[in-house]
Length: 112
Image (cartoon, rainbow, N blue to C red; front, side, top):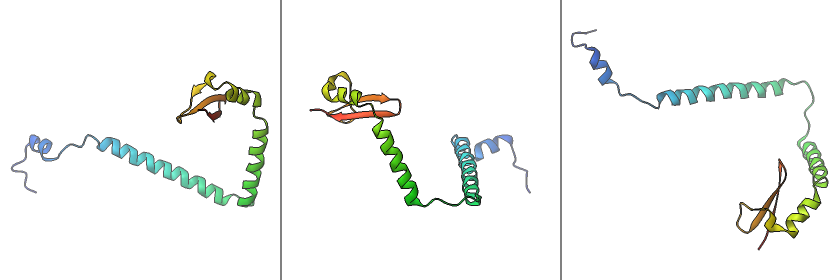
């Protein structure tokens, strides 16, 4: 190794700095950690000794749940939106109005 022409300044000028390298490496480490976590969850599921549930049975069970939830919807509030649409905020789609019935239930109707 020849160090005759070595100066400390030559190191700082010889390699370009990449300000995004730290962020890029952090994202790579986060992705690797997520991948490891996800693969662990999949393996745990595969190792589960309980019998698998067929897809059509799961779909039927969730269809029953949706029907039960639909039956519990407060129709008086939904009717209020239909009868008095200007009481609620304009919808995300042009020509519609929205009403938040519950924190996780949004009722939307078209109004011209």
